[in-house]
Image (cartoon, rainbow, N blue to C red; front, top):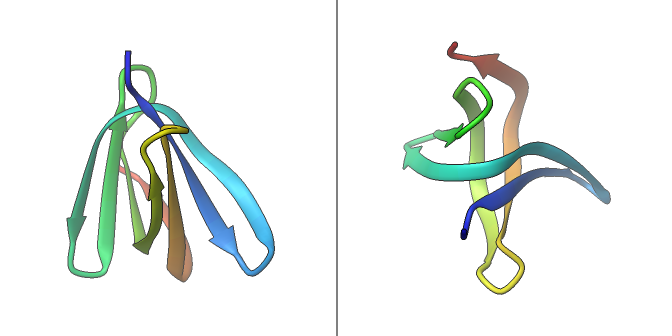
Length: 70
């Protein structure tokens, strides 16, 4: 399977947000991520890096607010 792990980078700190991500939707200043096992999350962030080999996505926050949709 090819799910990704999503990280949020604040300066030098990198925090894991969600594993087994099956979908990522970027819409303006928001990124919505969904996985098999966790409730969807919407973050005010932008995509900083996608590493297809390591199956990782790194986001950069626009604000410190993280919302759960579930």
